[in-house]
Length: 104
Image (cartoon, rainbow, N blue to C red):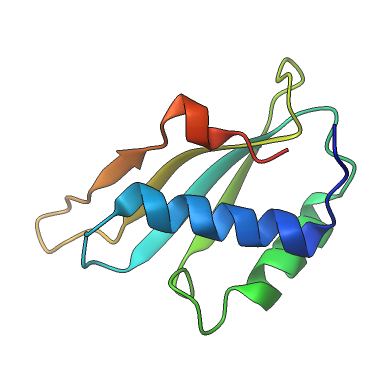
């Protein structure tokens, strides 16, 4: 495994999210990731790094949802990206293709 710093991990998550939603014009609200036992950073460090790098990007409105999965073979995997709920309580949920989901 190639070591990445948190800033690089967060930039890869951003790029994956933007590529996943494609031409959707709605702002990204949530990016859901799973982290495995190979992920060596705390949730607080991860969220701080993500929140610091997201401003003035296509994911500036996004919150990062983190789920821990001890069975995950990789360190970070992006699972889903969604936009904001509309007035009817519906939102678009974009599943990240398996071949694009693994960050590290």
